[in-house]
Length: 144
Image (tube, rainbow, N blue to C red):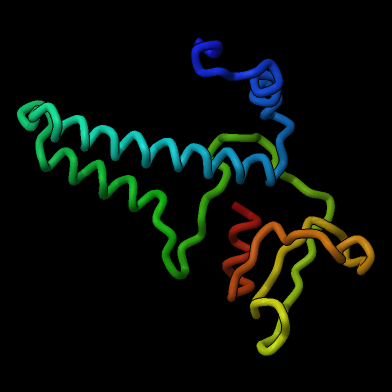
C-alpha cells in the first residue's frame, strides 16, 4: 500500500520514529493531517453532489460533520490550538524562552517562543516556535 502512495523508505522510517519527534515535526504532521481531513471533507461533498447520493448522506449529517471539523480546527481569538493529540508522547524541551516585542519594532509585536536558552548568540537567527499577542495563550500552547 505504501508503494502505491509513493512513500519512500525514509518517510516510513520517520513515521516509525514518531516517539522521538519534537515540536517542529509534530507541527508539520498536524498541518498535513488537517489539510488531508479538509480535502477529504471537500471530496466527500463533491462526490455526494456529483452522484446524487443525498439519500445516503443527509444534509444534517454533512452539517454535523462540518461543525465538528470547524470546532476542532478553526483558529479563533483566545482558542489554544491543541497541537499534539497523541502524535508524539513527549514534546519536552530542556529550554524555552519567551521574548516580548513592543509595538514599533521591525517584528510583529507580541510574544515569541523559542526552544533555546536565553543566550543571544543561540537565539539570533532562529525561527520562533510560535508567536502570539498574549503571553498566557503562548504559555498554554506550549503546555498543551
